Length: 344
Image (tube, rainbow, N blue to C red; front, side, top):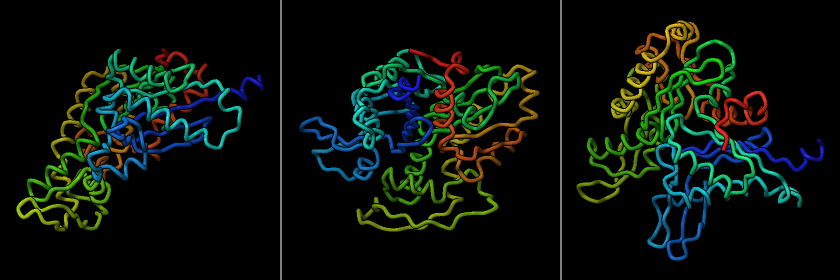
């Protein structure tokens, strides 16, 4: 058994719209933006992850950057496969000469609303990247395991995972998803809302990376925060003159810009609560709602959801890594969680 384990390589992947995180044998070894840069003339991949992110929005006509996942699913099959291969190679850089002989078992988390065709695309990409065994697990289930919830017990728990492309809302009990709601409104929409607000309200054109930084620095879900961030200086192109300029914005402006998208997520949460069986509703009243994913880091989001649902809201300790940690735990305890897997 020891010799088998020597050549057994276990990789858990959170293949996200915004970021891809890989856990190998229990440790996070890759945490990179889900983006690739391609040489248009040769069609070769010239950079992935952070290196490609640095090129995003700054390329010339011979290079283009692609985010191969959109709304939580594969939009560009070839680029996704190349990205997975490249990121797996990052895990092998310091491995021994026996790395190429290792048997790779891979588990990837997927949105709960994914179709069979989209599921097959994820599985095929993993197999072409070198996996001999591929397992798929739904994101809300992985998030629940990563948070530390005992998903096998007869107790209802509601998980909300707000990622880059999708917001996953699910009620979990007895090792299964009882009811769920998956909507394609999430972090990317917040970024787009900020770009649109800056263009409409301030006549300034900004790029996706700048909008992302605004979201991180002064992003908020409420105009009333206990510990508000300082105003943030934004640089972009004046739409009237075409000249670069700088303006200062506050978190209250961004809270207003994000209100429409956040309201859609709130409506999805209420819809999921309406579908929940009464016995599980009683459990959720006691346990509250758990938030995971990068979107849950938005300032004041927990209080906003709590006011709307009248339920306690718990934000995960490491919301960005809850899903991949849960995927890694499920992979390491595959016998225990076997019935959870969507194996291919």
